[in-house]
Length: 320
Image 1 (cartoon, helix red, strand yellow):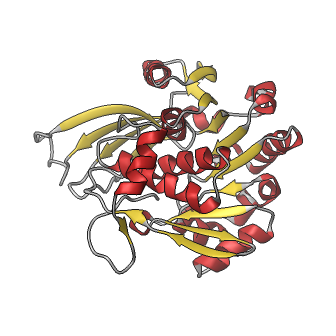
Image 2: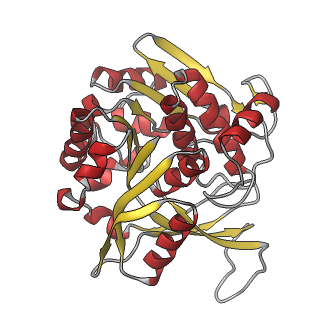
């Protein structure tokens, strides 16, 4: 399966555990500090490569040491980075994530070069030759550019998926509406569904997205797993019960598992189970790249591990 992951690429600097920022110029000791590739395109690329896809990343980064590190980390994961464009006047997007003991991850974020990506940067031939296009963060590059890229993919028989980046409170339907007819699988979190649609009910929001043209909406719901919504009905897919270390990259891992599953011809339900398994494997360590697993290991994990149904207590893998 040949996949182009296009859109948001970020270098994450993660610190764990952080209960509070020291006052003034105070200091505190932590257990771990790591740097990882991340973002709705970059993070998804990492897990797709682990699950056996051939992955090509496309997006905008800076010509700076941060960008050099991001390219190195993606390349080490087996991802082709030749379609990443390097800006000389804009920094690479980056985040500092102080991870709380319970796995929560507040963020200090630099938008950087991601918002500079435009039609002249798109590897149109690579998109047309792919089996699948995953577009992460269409609202950052603008709905017109996103629509053009997705429609190009569909014209060439390429399946498509989209994950959103902006928090729901910053979302608006006009930011994504024109692109939805060209989206086979829309993969937002529940806050984004409500925020971008303006609906108060999650299922109503998902149906608004379907009515505008999306083929399927798979909503990630943190510890509650995922909710699949199609014109034929709604189905909940529980998360897996695990000890959460860090939820960074779980939504991207879910997207990767879902995309890989559909590429293998699995049903939406089975693809969502694979997505939840990938998210659970990532959540047990620090950063979007955590976990030395492949497709077989993810499938084994899904078969053998307890799933967290709504009536059960305990920690579970977040996928939002």
